Image 1 (cartoon, helix red, strand yellow):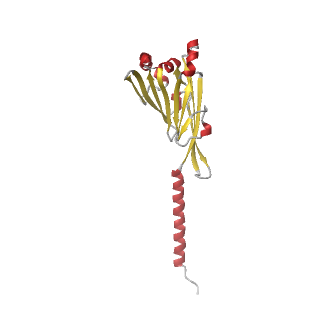
Image 2: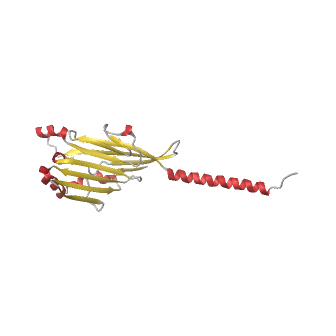
Image 3: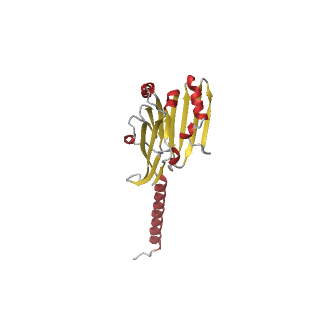
Length: 224
């Protein structure tokens, strides 16, 4: 079993950024080995370009995408909006706060070997002053969060409820009226490679036994 856990940062979204943006999307793709890629897309409204640009320029984006050699980040004007697009390849979930990915090989009936994955994260709202204006705007201020797993998703494991499952991907549309959202999803996939190897070995053993039996039949003298 492999567990990647972090305690240093949170996946934090400033409320002012959410309110100023026309689109905020967080996406995580989990690889077969339990590592992954976190992607972020932020698009401003025409009247909020300066704030979204400042969010990138002041390196606040580092709370979502840590500033390392593994980060790719683009920020610039697109038509009448400002867009931030980037991704970060992680080996340890600790670089992304409360992210936890568990990978475990399990025995079953058929297929005999399966790899089970469990994904957990917490998305927190920050810079929220609870003024009358912000309290009124929070339920209407939304962002999307999606996770792509290495295998088919267990629908019953999707948390919070309401996530839309499409094959290996689940997507939530979350409102900023809560201080934080707990994210969880599980998936599994069959491990065909070791099973195929075992079948090949068994087939070779069976062929060897058949050849040995036929050889004994040819070389054993017949009794009259």
